[in-house]
Image 1 (cartoon, one colour):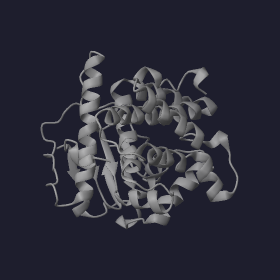
Image 2 (cartoon, rainbow, N blue to C red):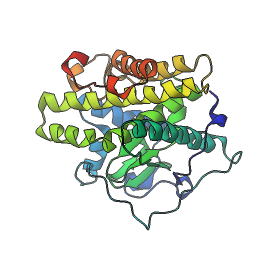
Image 3 (cartoon, rainbow, N blue to C red):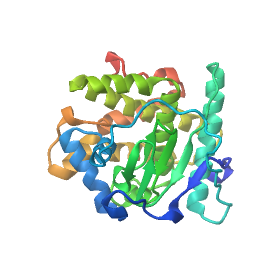
Image 4 (tube, rainbow, N blue to C red):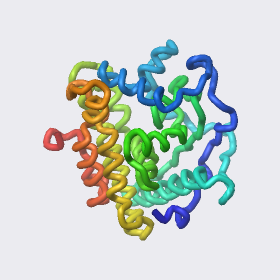
Length: 294
């Protein structure tokens, strides 16, 4: 993956130096085992891992109304090239998603407002509540920020068997896909459906995640057209999508699969929709909510 040819974004908030935030487990860092634990337990219960952790803090679920721009927001922190290749990688992938979505929103007659990406370690305080690394990377609609503990990349390779730079880029692009959904008003509609509960609420949550996979693929489509992908990159991304399918995670954790408790979709579904975005490069093809798509 030719990520060094991508434009680096300045929309990075580096909170790694602050260490784990206080509030979850006394602020202790949760390592690779903890990363799996909350995900597994949440899948068994048919819940969203972030909702579980926020609930443990006594807060309500993440809100879906995006705040207005705050003039007092902290300035962006952009890593200098060469200082930390890992941070530089994140900044450049983020910058390339900005360029892609800015162009696509312009074609749709709108303006793309990029999110900020927060790098943290262990745990972090967001507008959606206190969250641990155990939830994995997540997007908070309430503050329009993506939260990422880079330790997840190590787990993606070592524990999930999905190594490679494009696999990591897929993770970032998936969370940016959630931001795109927020800007398009899709997140609010899904939140309303989830509040009604039942099987329909769970189904739309899965559709939301699969659509984010498809939108990640749309970004990958244009990155490929710009000559930024190397042979094997697409396969690495598809491998990552398959590695974190609900059925695979459930089978690894308890030896059986319960589709009714899926939160993100099966491996086959995640691969299918990521592939759809990669092949078509068209947001209109990412309608995972239609009955024909299921």
